[in-house]
Length: 191
Image 1: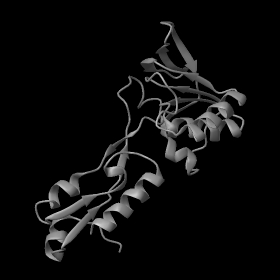
Image 2 (image 1 turned 180 degrees about the horizontal axis):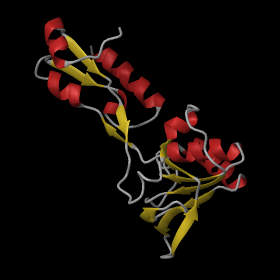
Image 3 (image 1 turned 60 degrees about the vertical axis):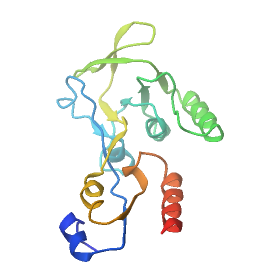
């Protein structure tokens, strides 16, 4: 409706039920040199607001990081996905995860798990590998795919105003579109 929902507006409207689906803000990890490197978020890449260079390092190897890597590798970019966790594309079902990881391998994408980040320099991302080797992964573009922070401020403000208030979507937890639609459906049934 072209208006930002605020607690005062909700109070004035006096709804019987509230459904808050305020999403999440993209997370930027605390890595020295990250701001100076002008790292970009995955969403800027996928929505075409930023064009990646030829050598790309993704920070974050979950579903979003791996799908962004797939997108970039298909465009002929040399891509390395780095992840602090021991597994890539965790949270994906096996029917989708297996084929995605095979595509990444076929396209020459490097997958590094259990890394420790040290800094980002003009040359690339300095990290320690799972094997304990400190190295620099050269990059002209660093893409952040490190998750998000659930935006629940409005929910916290209105839940005392509206006795029946529900959360739906990424403000609960960052997940897939399918999860959000299912959650919205369940909230609709509860109402």
